[in-house]
Amino acid sequence: MNRNISEKIEQTNLTESSLRRAFVNESLQNIPLFFYEETDSTNTRAKIYAGSDTWRVKREDTVFISKSQTGGRGRLGRSFLSDGRGLYMSYLFCPKESLSSAIQYTARAAVIAAEAVEELSGTVVRLKWVNDLYAGGKKLAGILTEGRTDKDGRLEYMIIGIGVNVLASSFPEELSDTATDIETVSGNRISIPCLAAKIAAGFEKRLSDPSLISEYKARSFLIGEHVTVLNHGESYPATVLEIANDASLIVKTEGGSIERLSSAEISIRKRAKKN
Ligand code: BTN
Image (cartoon, rainbow, N blue to C red; front, side, top):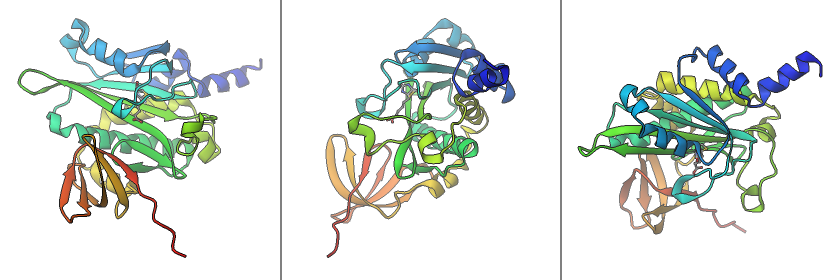
């Protein structure tokens, strides 16, 4: 194969060498990086590593990336399709803030990832509270934040797992109405290693930046929507009023009470068509 062509393919596809090169280009040569051809779940790998003596001594920010996952996990015990056409990455770090700020880390991570996708593909990315990236009205990526507290309630570590659908995919029937990928919405086949490195660099620089909340609000498309809230097994209709500075979602229920949600599943209710 012509050398230029083979180099281009390597830059687009995910190999350990292309990934390490992309990390060097983002000045991330010193960040510990674990790469897998296939693993169960990069969040699980990160969790196991966080319990090791190696991590406990240094508590260094560490990245885990796999070409595919056999047990990719999403929120609410759902699975996350990880067939090798996307980016599956987990970022392990030691947060300075308390457990209650977990939602803010998720929101900041969503903004950082949205910016990276936009910069590389040119497609406009919007956010669905709290952990989903959308483009063209469909879900492009999701974030699963997990953590562990010590006996005094302090966060020992936090893991931000992000899955991004990158290359054009034919999704299984149950996802085909709701999921999309970067290539389909933008027409551009972007480099998975470059996307990984850009997001990791953003996490390194800006994950503790509270000012990202204003960008989160600007990208959010739930404000004013009539939604169904699924919270602790209970489901009820509400209207979204705003996103607060601590990234919680403020809704008004049909009974008129105002609620501040820090974790819940939100789905937009379709309005009845007028004749
Ligand atoms: C969601 O959409 O509910 C969140 C999806 C998070 C998927 C990512 S892929 C990398 C990391 N490893 C996992 O098992 N899950 C996260």
